[in-house]
Image 1 (cartoon, rainbow, N blue to C red):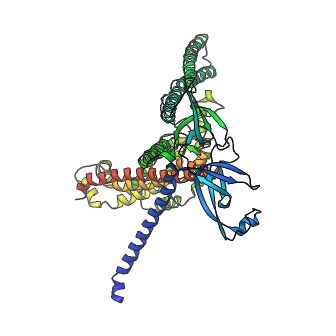
Image 2 (image 1 turned 135 degrees about the horizontal axis):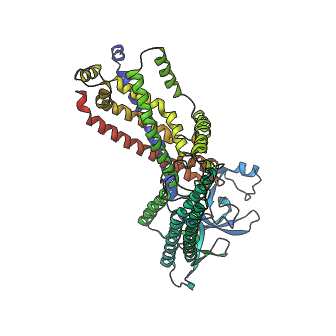
Image 3 (image 1 turned 120 degrees about the horizontal axis):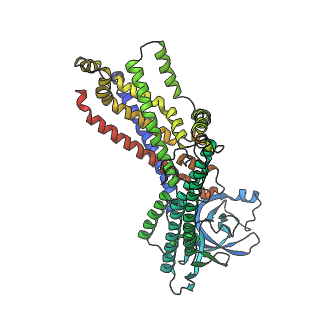
Length: 550
């Protein structure tokens, strides 16, 4: 036994076991998050409950069975809940029902005790109507009006076709508003700033005023034409309407311009449910958020996260490589160099919120404010770069992850034998040529390793971003069709902050909970995708420059 311990085999097995357990724990956590998030998009059956209230009066409840739990009888009695006499059970089941229709009921989630349920049915005609506002609507479709005419017979296919028509028209209107109309508004603002700049510089002549007025008049005329087209599309989208009978027994009529989708879950087959599940996931990934981020999609957050991480990688990679090359190849081995290395290592332990405060004070207020005063005085007092934006978020996270890239690059440089450098110099190459053609290519896998670690940390950071650029809901993306196309001064949305906002700032906790899991799983997927891309590049570089090692 003693010889076995001296061989080190027990420690190898213990290390392997610990790594395996950690891997299983991580995979289990990811599976749990994925399951709790992805099940949200599955079309659940809709039930109709006959429920008695505290006074024994029956009423109807329609909705999804969202959750259930066992509740002690004593706890219910202590809370003043009246229970049937002779109840001998120690536990009662209570059900959490998602009833939707939030403009007509106090809450779109309610708990119902099993003792209050007189009957439960699953009618095939119950529909789930997804709307742009006020969440889902549950009820029975009783009437459909298309182009002023009531539709008779089976309403399923005509209803779906009318919804698709209204959704298409709304999409055209949104594209027109964000595209051509947005471009005109952008150009009008540029004209205003141009006039203001000429006024500040003392060169606002009558001739220039006339040119600007003529251009402004032309843009306003184009705007009037597009505005009429926009209003026509909106009106055409609201042409049709549907009437639905809800759980109160009331007939509610709603325009189809406010309807996004409809399903009859109790009639759907398994293949239809699977197709609808993929459709809902696609809408979640490619759509925009609604209802204070508790509904809709997360595409702006995905775009903001990826764009910010790529911009951060573009900034941190040359800075980290140059710093590592200087420290390893040029700096002398003295006290100052040791002090710099210790400082770099210690920077990795600074809390991320401190970097956020630094970014807000230095990048936003000092650097951004100076840029505004020097290059954008016509826009003041409204800030251009002197406000939180994606460029300052990328710079802040570049400073945060810089130690990782420096340390990883230095380790890669240290693994390159000195004989390779000496051989290159002996053949007549300069130190710079040796560094550029021999050393850096051989160290590129280590550089990519540092970049992978930097991406993994930066993509999940939230605290510093709350100070230097991220917002709950960004009106526009950092990229559009207006010159210079990439607007790095704009605020942006981020998946990590989206999770925080939905999970802790949402007014509807129950509705937000599955979105927290779904967005968390999506954030992990994005980080893994970015890391796999970087790993693929690293492996390619390793194979490409493998001959230099021999």
